[in-house]
Length: 224
Image 1 (cartoon, rainbow, N blue to C red):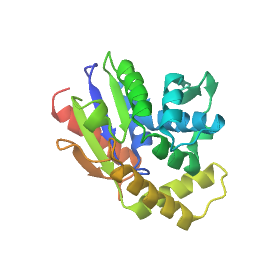
Image 2: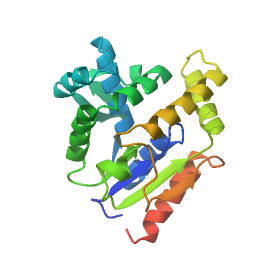
Image 3: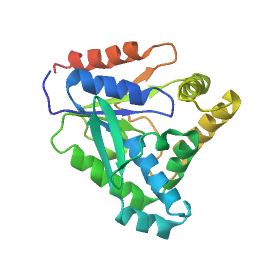
Image 4: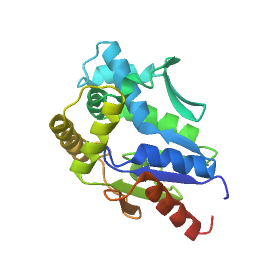
């Protein structure tokens, strides 16, 4: 397949974006750009500094000194915050909620957009998040929107956290998924929504391989 294209994959929390995007990137030999991890790392940094996540001036200071890197080691994505690997720390439900909150601030988003676009300058990336196709890469060569019912997404998250050794309650996870959806879709700045030209894929009744296959097929259909 020809390299150099930008593939944007958006969707709500738990729709399978991360795993699907990683596999699509691997199949194409592309870079996987996990923007959600970047926002989580930003939120973690704010927590470490004792910042008020609702305070704009604090967010401005945070953005100026933000140092986040994405690297790959043994086919695993590593998220570095100030050169420290925080890949595991950022994957809790709590950090997901805090990421949604810190991402409401324009200075934070502008800083991360800058970093994301810089990573995509040479193309050949699969960018995953909530505003990839609508804001960060509006001219992306391919746009996909993955979705699933809240119950399915909550079940996936529940199983994922159990496997990682976390003590979790399904009803609490479902509540967090619904709250996160509301936060992401109703925020004033870059709300979660499907780009008009994006191809929507409901992943509720599909496994990861089936979703990846659908995306690869759509890309192949257009002659890459």
